[in-house]
Image (tube, one colour):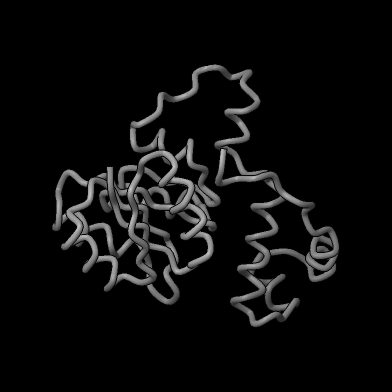
Length: 184
């Protein structure tokens, strides 16, 4: 199985590419929308892993052109800023699945139908593969707001709908070290 991986975070893309290669999945990295479409035209992919945010572009805009290249291609939208609104929009536009970052190899394989879905609710390993801790998601969301407000705490707090002091307390509680998310 082969496909492009469209992500402007080159380090994440290269790490994920190596992990997928160990499972027999061939990927080509594209750092922006034009190179993703060029790779898809020459590569005739079975799937595409597309990041929602590609610098100033949106991965949502790539769904339709990728479908035009190959109608049966599986399109997985991957994002570090998961929300119900973007999930719904991606599915409406034709994405086959919507995965929060960091997407693990087992999660991607399940989304592509290459690995059986887990059925046991008691399986702690399965929960680690598919769920990002809430504290980590909150931290990433706060970091996105800070980036959009160029580090202005008061403006970021307004954007997040919280008091400035509450945001400062959350920033003082950086999440601890994470487990390995990409490799098994």
